[in-house]
Length: 432
Ligand code: GUN
Ligand code: ZN
Image 1: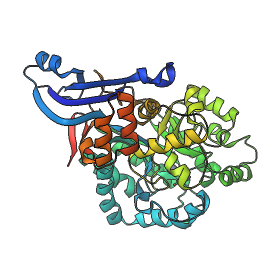
Image 2: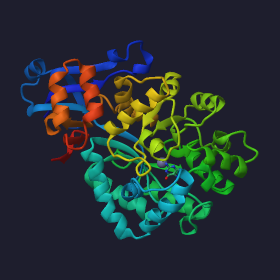
Image 3: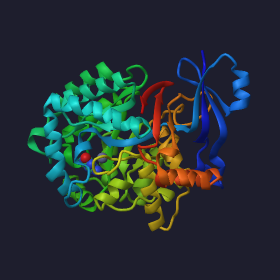
Image 4: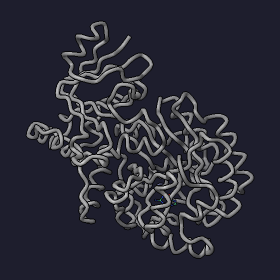
């Protein structure tokens, strides 16, 4: 039997970078209805009067005063870093040494991981995030425990164990041979579980991987066509300078990944702030996607990602919280910061661009063509929010009538207080 969810509806139903007026990509229905079948697929979206007539036998979920939006896609986040948000240190490399390695080392204890995994799933859902691409610590049990928690909570995610065998805390280093065996076991157990959990080959970043490790990862990634790959690239000036020292024969950072077949379709790279024009052109041509993580880039002082230029060139761009260099689980906060970065670069971004990058734009980075919209045929991954739970948002909601202005108010005011329910595959996974 179908279920009809009633409420105001907001979704971006085409790529706003492909059209002249981004506002035209916004779908808005004041008295809307979302019809979902019992397989968790959206059957129809439209006006409640019409759809309640058409689906007379459907069960009705009345969201009085609620707004329904697609679930968010967090295209880049680190599970073990949840408890180190805001740690005070210098830029990326110092922050890794001072806080990140010790924190990830503490995940050697499976009990620590188990306790954190449930909290992590809850934090994603309570921020309206239904699909995320996650780095764990590089302990096999960390990936296993997180997958198990995500399976139990009903989450949709791509998870990868960050491979590293050099330039990191010695107890976190692992040989390429051992790493390969651990990843094969994880892929066997979890990849494509229930059609919602997937494994991602995850070179942490090139400086932490020897040539042997990169070669193994390239072979593993290319050994089958359905794996994903996630990593970091060109985030920080000292990091890029370091690449020149460690890999002197490669013409740039991206060339290191290219040399080992760690680039192209299904490869998603975070930051890409300092990429050269040539690197960007090769990424675009090969089908590599990038993730903009503004709260992280501002927190670490990494720099300003040129979102309008890169997404405008046709590259797929998702948004990532990059917890815990990033400072908030909320994709609303991430959009708000992306807006400020774009302003500083004098290439302002439209609110509709931002919502697209936080939903379908992110899903497409991972080749998911049926996620991120309120539209027939798409998976019913959505969030129900109540603007009344946040005083300033609720006042703005009443004041602004234009859907783009309403979206603007959400971007700059909404937070986890307003999320009342989250659904994955039409199944409620979170409710306050
Ligand atoms: N580069 C390599 N590892 C990391 C990490 O954990 N966070 C960020 N922001 N950049 C990285
Ligand atoms: Zn990261």
